[in-house]
Amino acid sequence: MLRLTAWRVARMVPLLFLVSIGAFGLVYLIPGDPASAIAGQDADPAQVAAIRSQLGLDKPVWEQYWHWISGLAQGRFGTSLYDQTSVVSSIQERFPVTLSLTVAALVVALAIGIPVGILAATHRGTVLDRAITALSTVGIAMPAFWLGLLLIIGFSLKLNVLPAVGYVPWTTDPGGWLEHITLPAVTLGLAAAAELARHTRSALSETLQQDYIRTARMIGIRSHKVNLKHALKNAGAPILTIFSFQVSFLLGGSLVVEQIFNLPGLGSFAISAVGQKDLPVIQAVVMVTALIVMGVNLLTDIAYGYLNPRVRAT
Image (cartoon, rainbow, N blue to C red):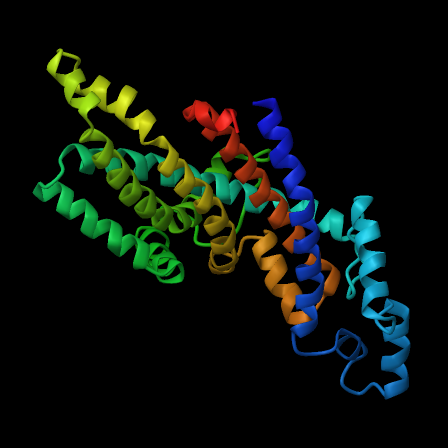
């Protein structure tokens, strides 16, 4: 297992390098000039050129990349082009919001998706199974912004039981945090729950048809023990794959959900930076997101080793 982990970590290094090239290069495709935006509409070309020189945007692209990647290797993401604040401090301030939203959405997805998928698999071919499959399809297809608006109208405007916008840190007020994070987490987590339910149903249904499961039932082992201890563990690999994919999906979905519920997280931070073409901020958010996704994939590989001993031998 240690060799497997070391090999996976080593493979992350060239991948991060490729991500850094993409993050640095793609932002230059965004229309607009940050120096012109900072100088204002009435600025003359000399003022724009001076700002561009001050920000280092007049240097060759490869030199700008080398300066940026050198700072990145030392844990420095630079400063915002607009307010000159440290990008690291801004991310440290906003990251807990996105993290808490993502974790809460994952809890919603797991609490709903896995049990519902198990229920559908153990009642395969019944009306219940068909109803769960249909609802899962609707949940996957439902746009997050539309569901979020429906939840705001129902629970905030009509029932007035949950706040529609805003955020309260967990460390300040756990109860207030739970109230403010519930609707965003449900909005973000339901689509992931539907995806998990569908794949759990598919993987578990296939496993339940195997001969060793039939044998276990024939010798008198209780159905719930067969389903949960034997079948679900052996069906865990594809479910785990979908779960790891959902983390990336939830991080991307947070861009929309944070805008709907006015949450001061990385998603709203990134959208604002794209509108201003704040290059250091965009690049930093992309790199942090990539690190999170790679970390989740690493944990997934380690979990594979636990579920399948053959993986540990590779």
